Image (cartoon, rainbow, N blue to C red):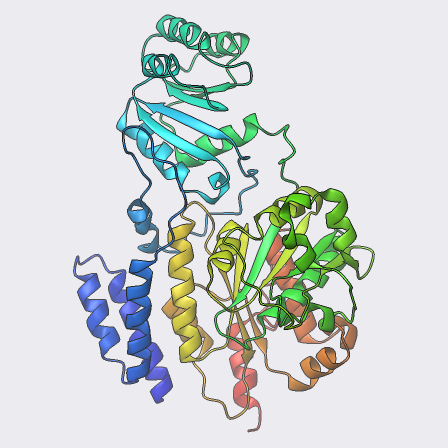
Length: 495
């Protein structure tokens, strides 16, 4: 076994130790990582672990009068079984910018509300949590203004709940909506609640996903109604080809599904979307975020550069005339407009770690990580996956692509070992083809325009199908997604 493979195996052993049920997984993982001979890798990993503990992602969640606040410790169980295959992208629309008060009587409902408060779909809203049920809400609003939405838990009998809600209504504004969590699975009671103006009723036990879905459904008629999906592509290291993958997958989605797609280049100083699609735009994504208050459907459409009937580009300036010091939520308004107007939005996220890049990843419906099979990519991909599992506990895990596989004379980690260490099976292994990719890049074309019948072009079509969920990726052993077939082809390739 080569030195590189042994180091990857050491990292894999550390991951297995971290997920073992022995109760000593933390110490075992640390000792295993220390055994890696490359000292700089350990130093960087140690620095990363310290930095994550000091600046871990914490959503801005308003804390109620009784001091309840969201903690991601409850979501860390997701990393013990990191990638549950049953999780699929959610079709729930983000909750709009509203104020929510939740009055909880039981620990279970309180826990569900706390967990919901940290979800990415709730990031636009302000949630306060209070102890007590409907009576506590009534007493509170006798001296305080009512919010946009009140979530109340009612544990009393049906008649008592109706009486308590009647009293609560006296202190609510005309536009205030009420969501009731109750314990009676009675259709007559439900109809009575609807007749009295209650917006929705959920029968306990309730979980975070159902609570978020109910709140979202209450506001489905608003302008924030979600139409499309956002797919964020990010590289685990600079130069791994994440932008090329994003652009080709976006083109494949538009071509094969016949749906409108927008490719948004978030790398303002060095973005390559304009070059890769051979378009020269006078305006683009910089104007979209320059004055977020002016951005609406009309301006959004005006800033798009049309590539063909279904594909449009939001190009980056690609100049260094200005510094691009962006705020944490610089792209939030743009993503909201894009979701309301386009079925598919592809975010080409540059390889950097800022508050806005982090927030863009967390807000996406799907995240696709592109990596090259070497040790630095393995470490960075693991850091990204661990963070995203923690920050998005209710979403599907990120997808992994291995690019530039089989480069001649370059030592690399075997794809199977790479996947085993991360506990994620690569969605695709794209072989290294300098001639094909170089020709496409230099001529401003996608891979299919250069060689439509190449295995790489088929790979992008399969990736597009797998990401959108419109059809299953091909399982043929001869296909470009097969690890064993790819490794066999590489082994036979003359060096």
